[in-house]
Each structure stands twice: as C-alpha cells, then as structure tokens.
Image (tube, rainbow, N blue to C red):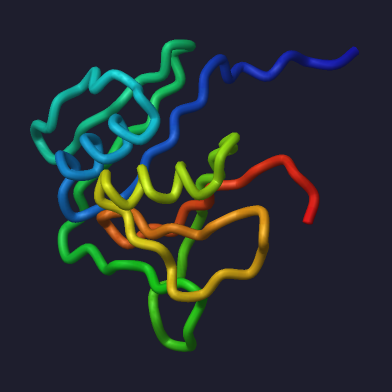
Length: 128
C-alpha cells in the first residue's frame, strides 16, 4: 500500500539582497498579488491558484553568475515561464527590471537576469 506524502503545498523561496525589489519585480511580470509586503527581511507574492513565491534577504548576499564560471557563485535553480510571444515577453521583462543574459543558447527561449542576479527563462512551446 502506497503511503500518501504528508506535504500539501510547496512554496518557492528565493534568496536576495532586497526582498521588496524582488517581490515588486515578480509581482509585475507574473501579475500575481503581493500578499506579504516587504517587512522583517522578506516579502511574498501569491498566484490566483495559491502558489507562493517568497523572497528572503540574506546578509552579504552574493549575486549568482550565469553561465557558470569557476570560483563564482553559480545559480542554484532557475524559473522557466512559458509565453506565447517571446519577443514581447522579453521586452516586458526588461521594462519591469530584468536584463537579457549575455549568453543565449536556444531559438525558442531567452535567458533573463532578475534584479537580484538570478537567471530565469522565458520559453515557448514551439520546437526549434
């Protein structure tokens, strides 16, 4: 008999230097509500379905480097967002505070850098 896992919900927590900046950025690009305003070193946004992304300030935060470089803080995870119009999504992300990563590897996605230096990808479902 298979035992049911006791976990009922998963939240994502992203380390950063400024939780307020990060919550505003992701709230804007995802159109999610800022449900936990910046206070006491953290903030969070919530999707209409209840998924939460929280941002936690870390003392002496080190911005990750992408792509990986020997001896530098690399990414520990990244988020993928699926979009219908790639170029429109890239422009919106840039206007919201993201940067286009200097290295790109695929025609159907763009790697972006959020305000804390974390890479994230904008992807389409279209094959290359």
